[in-house]
Image (cartoon, rainbow, N blue to C red; front, side, top):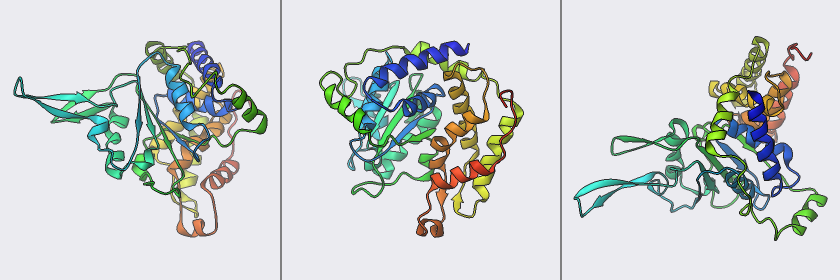
Length: 316
């Protein structure tokens, strides 16, 4: 069963790697996020490949995808859809918004107003849009891949904690190393932002791979390990907000996907360690005192993971 998920992930990884060079680890994590039907937030400075990664993933899936450029004047109905009066029939009909797609790319999401950002909450969690008292499901599978610039950039509205919690994972790509950047320059005209990539899977095959993730075995000691890490974030003196129960469930699912992409049908503590930072860091918040000291959430989480005893499993 796991073979199919691994094959789909390998095909997507090789395809996306043609465009986003030198970031195979980050691409693999992004694909693990999608294999759990979770939503992905790409957080980095402009020009590091966030939109290119989002488009490359979308183009690698033979489904529908829709880009939305978030701006301060974007309205909630511009995303979800709106009821329109039809003069010919004297009735109201629903005009679907961009969310009725398999992959929604929200570019620079933190440039949209808080009201518009919140319009995504229902569809991200429930996979449906409610308008005029009627709930309308979006196509499956459904993913949101959003990009944002650091909050200290001008013209940005920081995503609230409740919105951040809807994203299964937050990734930072960082700058490419010099050799990789040279290869990007050399191949710029051949592969531009992933627009010429051919699909390597389709929604039906991807949906089957997603369903197989839950079949990956997780022993009780690994469950305990995940909960111990989460509990440590909730009582840490430098944190005012720890990992929620939704966060621990997401760690479990993404760890299963990480194991499946490695061709295994069981999860190890190392899988949990590999996915904890991208899954948990955006769900945690520092105290004011810790921020003044220059502490970083990622460093606090790394210290917590180092302190929590690693359980013995079949590979120990």
